Length: 172
Image (cartoon, rainbow, N blue to C red; front, side, top):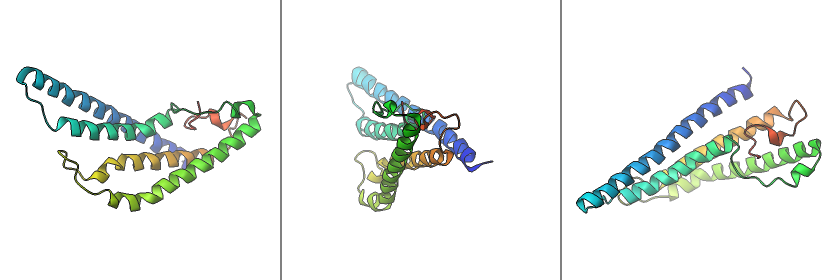
């Protein structure tokens, strides 16, 4: 099995897992908030830990969903200038953008070991250390970086179509 095929298999599996986790977090948020609303309505007593946990679950849902949105090409791109270029220039610009974004992701990931230990302190009413909020973000960044590596390994599209049209390239 080629490395890019192996990467695609792993990235596809991670996409499915992250989608399930993000949806589970959304359902969890809706559930605990519904219970809180019903508790206030029926017993005039709110559940104090619902808001902090909703905040944590929302942050995690966004960060887990970050990778899924990118993989499915649902992110927003501004490419009206690039689309006016010839197919060859479109591929060249896409490769340049891929390298720049890969550099940005590498910078983010290289800062993780420095930033995570600085995010200390327990989240009120949650009991988790603050750095746990950022862990899904770094996981998504690492997976998106692997997607860019896979796309760069694939090279220009075999059929002559611009690389921006390939799945996972992030272009819409």
